[in-house]
Amino acid sequence: KNIAILASGSGSNAEKIINHFQGSSKARVTLIASNKKTAYVLERAKKYGVPTHTFNKAELESGQLTELLINLNIDFVVLAGFLLQIPQGLIKAFPNRMVNIHPALLPKYGGRGMYGDNVHKAVKAAEEKETGITIHLVNEHYDEGKIIFQTAVKIDKTDSPDQIAEKVHVLEHKYYPKIIESLI
Ligand code: GRF
Image 1 (cartoon, rainbow, N blue to C red):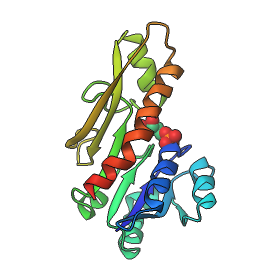
Image 2: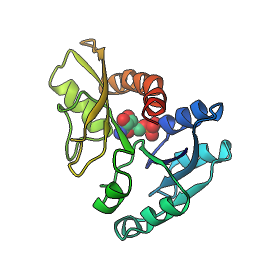
Image 3: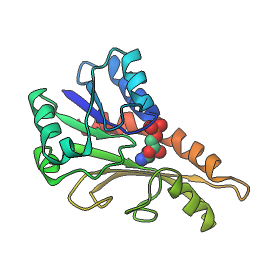
């Protein structure tokens, strides 16, 4: 099976996923696509010889990206720190075959504006005792697709938002590749 990863940023999750499937006969990452030309995820992809593609918002919304994914025989789409809203056409082209990771325990700290550091700052401000990750299918409603997997980690009173983010990243790296494999 061919996996495409959409990412807007650093891509540490993308790298773990590429790594995970390098030794697999079932699936591999055959495309890294980004809406940001300068995203570090593209460097990581090059390091592993994974083909990359960049696109802009208009190309996403007009269906050009969907067409490309179909033409490349992509079977499964992984969002890993992808910051644009996925258009309906793309969701419909990959029913139950598109997954996202959210750096908190949904339904808490989800929805618009809740991405990246904002999530961890909000968790800190609310003095939560734990946070975690949510891996979910992508459907028409932002951050509301079927939840596949969640796991939590304790927050210490003294943890800064950055330290919370670090703890969450550890969970993401540990579980996202495995959960993707189980879905495929
Ligand atoms: C992750 O925390 C993910 O949950 C969030 O964006 C971050 C991406 O990190 N949606 P990276 O680019 O994989 O390092």
